[in-house]
Length: 222
Image (cartoon, rainbow, N blue to C red):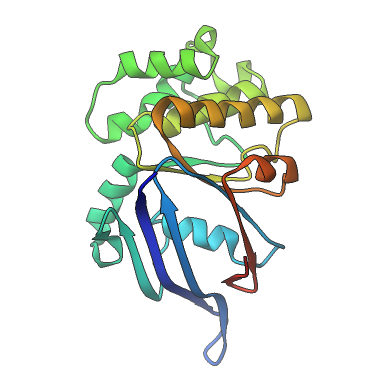
């Protein structure tokens, strides 16, 4: 597994008022290898979600560098970031965030449509891989929470991203469905050599990952 993502001295603060700022990230350094599954853990307020948002280009750091395959995305324009985000990064959230008016298949295809591609065949393949091929014409209200999260995982993979970022992907699921999603993530790593960075409070999930990155007060402590 080769290093392909290098995070160097990332800092991020948010203005509280004219005089005060909240320092959320205080100098994050992290190397991530291709095909690695990393769990990020820490108490509320440690900076986990902020780090995930910055890695996903949903927010910009105040300083520091983020190199994807030696390409420093902190220097990208907003347009370049939007294109990079759609093509190279997949997202999985605690709540699946499927669009209610679209079918499972249509939800999966949305990132590809944004990129101007017709990828129905790949979407159908992904539905099969994640185990919900028989739900292609069902809307989110017509499927279970576990099935909806599987559809969301397929959506994250449609553009063959460099990395998938997941924020508590099992946090809204019962034990059976959570275990099923965990198993699926490891199967996807084996099939696609897919890289995952996962914020999770699920200790059993974290223990199965290649590494656990512990955060506290805006820093990586282990």
